[in-house]
Image (tube, rainbow, N blue to C red; front, side, top):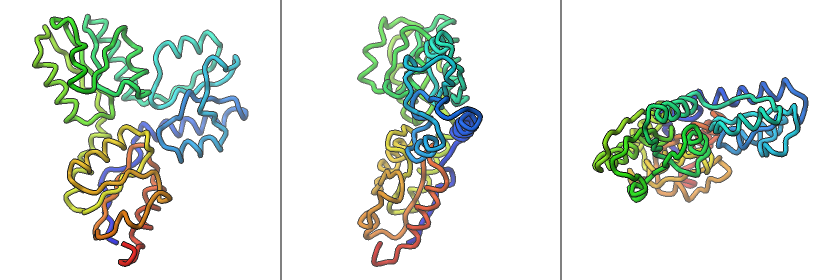
Length: 285
């Protein structure tokens, strides 16, 4: 079968840095002495590899003994987490993506400048939960139905977005907010350019193939967004974590398959998937 890969796919620098830091921290400490407050990244295979190396990724801050090393995952954490870790005499190793760090800083600055901070994002995403901790009463919105919560109407709003959101969605939300009678809007672009490039690349690829495979963790926001873009282009789209989830009927009747991957998906998963897809005989496809 013919297989074409998106020109931008897989690991971004933030994920690479987080994994490298996690691996180094585990090597430098005694077994069981490094605990992450949740999965370092949203990829089950990488999470399993780190656990095999000795990293506990389901840590509860309140249950940790003094002297334990706490790894803050790539999605970041709120200031209360750092304060509580210091109180409990825990050692912090910070794997927060630099772009998430920037979003945290921007939220804090906007509040200090007198803006009511609004974040466009998924309120349940760990990145968003951490970022909104850097200012009081941040309002999280992700659809126009949420905008009635932005009261009073004459406020000065400072707007940021979840780093992995699609620019088109963020632009629509900003436009909808701007159509309301707020006294002032200050928008700071906190989108991740690496994620945007992957979205642009998959949109280009959709014009060249007749079925799309998007590889990455099922809980990965940026991977789900890639799948949504493919579906918007009218293509049969399959969001899979690895080749193990592939079924031959997914490519039945198709000649050219496209493959992309989220920013937390390692190269070996992408390469294995593409190689096995190419090896399919016409009868299988």
